[in-house]
Length: 139
Image 1 (cartoon, rainbow, N blue to C red):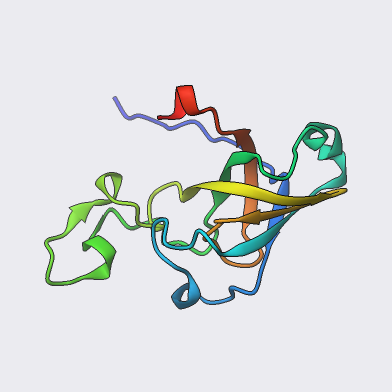
Image 2: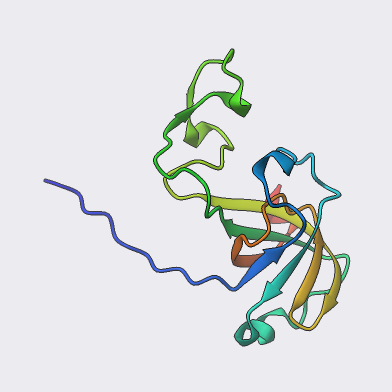
């Protein structure tokens, strides 16, 4: 029996704006805690963001739109001296569904603009969702 995967339709809630336009400019795996970005939300999502405050921590799910979706195996951190591994055991942006997950700190809120620190993605990256960090549940 052939399995036909379901198709999901996702619509971004916003986009990331920053000065990172090239993948080589991005820090790797948590080393970019000081990277500053703005999440520009679409107007229809304003009610969903009303309670977001500076100092709060949030998980931001992004669609890594420039990633290789056909990549199934890669060398960890691109280091060819290390053996290839399956992308499900790596944090490679290349993967069948290139969903990014970043823990960010909100530094300012102005209408539909959320200034954040720690979002390690390129300018223009679509934001799929924003969820609060809950220490008791997220450890």
